[in-house]
Image (cartoon, rainbow, N blue to C red):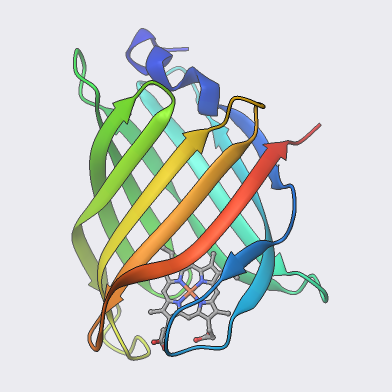
Length: 159
Ligand code: HEM
């Protein structure tokens, strides 16, 4: 592992939702989903990641995102470079404090024909729990709704 990434070593590997995650937003019907996460590296000061979500009952593939994680050497600043299957790309930046990552979108762009409403802002938190499980919470603001929670999910290490 590149030494720049040592502070994020706890994230590496494969994770699977422990219980189905919960999705919500004022404009949609609440839903449940399952998700697997994979964080890997090839020796560069970069983590490669893939998040694949599926319908909790039918297992049909749903939301997918992939990208890269970088750290500013010598600091606790972390950047996620993300592409989503919905046609959205984003840069999220934030800080690592112990085993908690708090990220805010700094740039969001999309395909010209992306479905409305458009996302304007995304905030996410990854937190490693004392029991070794990983929690992710995602909030978003759209054209017509202020920043509110969209996702909450807890993962366990996949074998
Ligand atoms: C709806 C964004 C992750 C499942 C939406 C909407 C937006 C959005 C903008 C439409 C809200 C509205 O109509 O007011 C995002 C972003 C994500 C994300 C930015 C990641 C950062 C996920 C994940 C799932 C998911 C992981 C898991 C399956 C859904 C579902 C709906 C929805 C089921 C409602 C039906 C639909 O509009 O397709 N999302 N989403 N989303 N999202 Fe997400």
